[in-house]
Amino acid sequence: MDKFPRTMISDISVSRMIIGTNWFLGFSHTSVAKDSFIKSYQDTKKVADILETFLDHGIDTVMGPPDPLLIDAVKEAQDRTGDELILILTPTFNIIPGGPKENDAEAVLDMCKRYQCKICMPHMIVTDTLLDKMNGEIRNIEKYTAMIRERDMIPALSTHMPETIIIADKTKADIETYIQIYNAIGFLMQVEPEWVMQIIKNAHKPVITIKPLAAGRLSPLTGLPFVWSTIRNNDMVAIGTTTADEAKEVIDISFDILNRQIPDITLQRTRSKRGLEETI
Image (cartoon, rainbow, N blue to C red):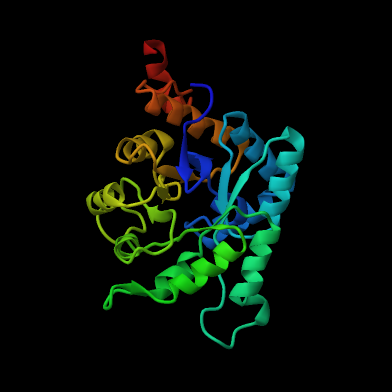
């Protein structure tokens, strides 16, 4: 397996591994200090290096907010390689009157279109605010999906609430994929992993799972096998990395898992493990 497996979101072919961006943009889910480190460390070149590593393995789909650092790095990686990155954006915008005009939905979605976004997923701060569990609806969703379609983008939803998928399907919302948090320890999940697994299994459209390593609380070897082995062949895993080496590591491990091979991992050498070295 040289190139990563692919699936379809509507009529767009995407890699089943999605390049996450929290570790590009400073959203560590760990501490303010860790966020600050990420922001001070990353620049356009370093992020483009990571994107290029993913592209080398056929992973050409990246998801994140319409942040200038991400957009500039995407352009640099594309210029270096001649390959196109499929951009999934997760914008936020005003959903009640009175906010800044530049944050109105029309202005934000126009910006996404200028950035050549292919799939537009309003962020959970939009989606989960619109979710009305009492009445079983996502308020005004048809208004926003129509605006996304008018700009030749594919409508989708980012959510942290498992009910969103069920209600979107039940109401036949114009949604082509959804985000769902999914990891082995239930980090940031609102119900147990077993419940989310069933929701993903029964979803009408492909699901993008996020936070497979629980924002660094799980190692790739413990986090990735759980997710890859409990989703469908048309579902995806979004994973963020800080360096090109980290990207190569999660790619290699994922290849081995999908090929049902024991991952060939370079072991960390420390003094405490010196007595074990002669056995391997």
